[in-house]
Length: 88
Image (cartoon, rainbow, N blue to C red; front, top):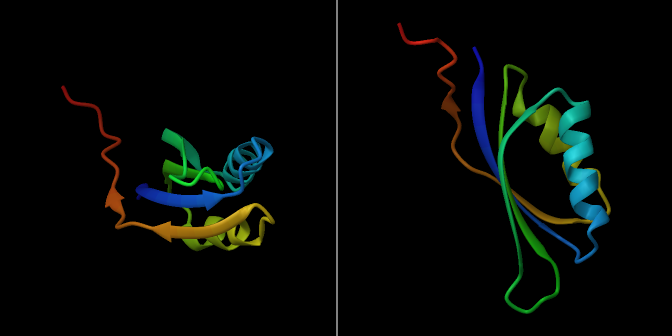
């Protein structure tokens, strides 16, 4: 069963940090459903929110994202079951 997750990630100010987040997400087999990015209030970094979906355990992704040099903080929000059935 596919689950949808929301991650809030605080990174450094470098744009390459966003590229790394998206690359790791793709390599781990998670589908990006939505994304929001804005600078932190003190302009010291970026606050990135990723909405992702996969049938794989989220721990596979969070463990790899936490290893990234750019990631300062990562928060996982409650998961929801993704409705992948088509309505008739």
